[in-house]
Length: 375
Image (tube, rainbow, N blue to C red; front, side, top):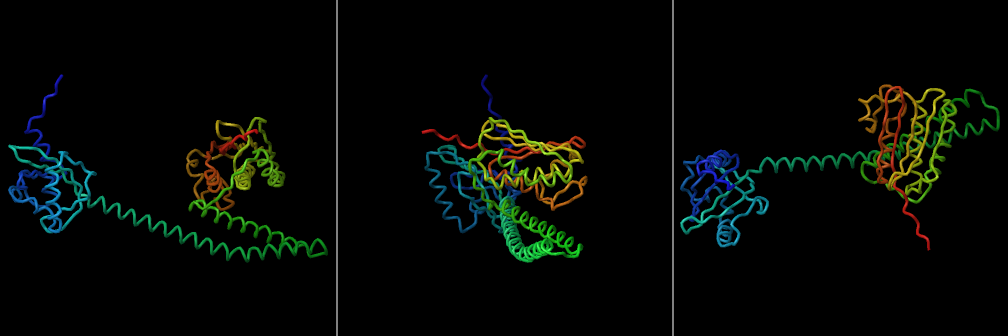
């Protein structure tokens, strides 16, 4: 069924109420149509513009260039140029202010002469928004750079006294092993050493977060058995698990392939997850670590039967400095942020499944190592 063209009256009415400026000129470039959108943009009324030269809507410094473009377009094979196909143009309002615009132009032949119609859109607000966004991005980058510089300086300045405290506390404890010291001196030195180590770990966490957020965290992937890394992390945390009466268990099928990871960084990830599992498990609880092959990645899971995380809090668990209200708020709240960042640096992903009272499962993936070719 052949579609009937819309009556001219309908087309003209639609053009008249368009928010964009729609302007028609004849072969002499005198305005023959000026819609409501054009009135709003330029500030002239239709009666003031009809029959006037198009140049009244164009800044004077662009008149010569515009004349050349019109002459060239009149002779061109193409009969239309869409928005985005032309360079940015400028208009001038009744009050003399100039503004940037996008325009589409079409040419039709009427009575043996060319006539032109232009659809023009004022992009002042859009360009202002782009400029403001660009300035905001620059400000944010400057703020991040300033923060990184501050962290670097503060961390360096803090580490010197922290290392001094660690060395002195260790020296006191070693002296206590060789000769008798008052009991409270040894106890105080042990507390000093533990506090200094915690401060050192916090400084390193802050530096790691800064590197991850700025994209400066480098990893050195090498083929390795994931079981070796799980065993290394488990051995580190065995004293903590024993002290809290939490059992650690591991299950890794023999079919799990080598992974391509930075061993030290993945041990760091596993240590954080296992530590959390122990921390939030009840006395006599269990933390289970497993690994399984999943297409081109290996999936590692750390599961506990501890207090769990409310569903409403799950979207925030990877936020910097965030800690659940249900916990004792020990630490700085950076562990999961760093762990996920390190996994992402390997091209993997991390996610959490949890429910209050039933425990938490943290899963992450790392890439499989490429199979070695036999000669």
